[in-house]
Image 1 (cartoon, rainbow, N blue to C red):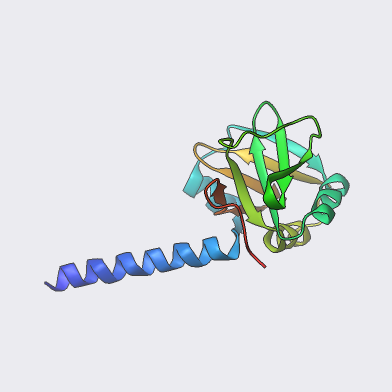
Image 2: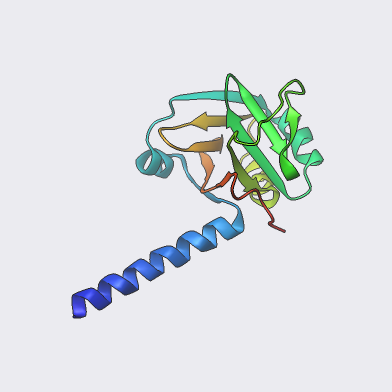
Length: 146
């Protein structure tokens, strides 16, 4: 009985911590931790920091990313801002982060390059030795953070 109770409490704590991270729109971790948790980067695309900063200026509350035949960046309500030529279908998935978390990552390291990375099952964004992860998948969850 004690083991069952301990298992239930542990499960509830894990669910609560996952919901908290998702409700914050992502979490910044070290590059080493990202590699341990999510595996090595399979492929990536670099974005100059100045260009990435302009993309952040367009967003109100969320930024969404995908690596499909190149980088796709969208903001609130799945509006594509990079590249202009891409049109999203309703079933195209993006990884969505709160703008506040993206800005926090941007300020965490004064690098000249932001890298959007595809790992086994996760899309991450790195700036130096800091990595933004735990974004939501859109659809179904497409934002709403303040």
